[in-house]
Amino acid sequence: MPAQPPLLPFDARAPKMLGYWIALAVFLVVDVITKQVAERTLVLHRPRPVIGEWVQFTLAYNPGAAFSMHVGDASRWVFSIIAIVVLILLWRMLREAPPSDVLRGTAVGMVSAGALGNLLDRLRSERGVVDFLDLGVGSWRFYTFNVADMGVTMGAVLLAWSLWQEGRRHRGHDDRPASAA
Image (cartoon, rainbow, N blue to C red; front, side, top):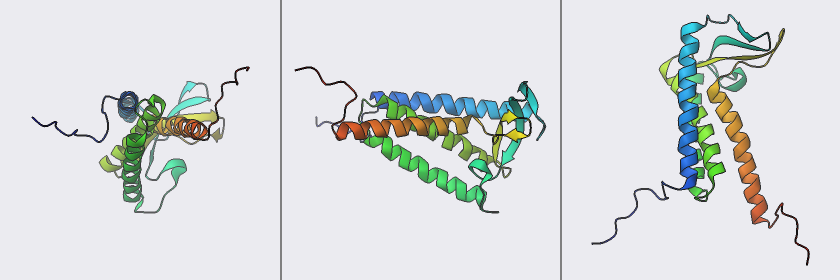
């Protein structure tokens, strides 16, 4: 009996895939749950102090992208299409990573979860992405964000680190000190 070709062009049991699926599941589930809780318990644009004025929960809807960037009435669909393209590119990046690269898998999983979490918000409501984490002091506030945004940011940093380390390995650089001869 001839061997069956694999269903996927890579080993789905590879360590990178474990990192990917765990990061994706954790960030996406926490994102969806926290957004639902925020919508049920917070009043739009009314801050609820958590740690004084430093950390507040403030419900807001963002019809655009990060830092409230928008492209007018088409923002919902433009940013939805961009998210889908990004998810496809991230999947390709994951497939091309070495099977043992757990860091790359985890990073791609975090960024993918963030993109997917915010995409789900855009598709389910014209109001846009649910944001509720509000950091700052007094009238100086950082932009309001959510767990999906945290996944994108932390995942992007890890992904950059992973790619930088890979570049160093390919150029023959190593952080280990040379052994004495």
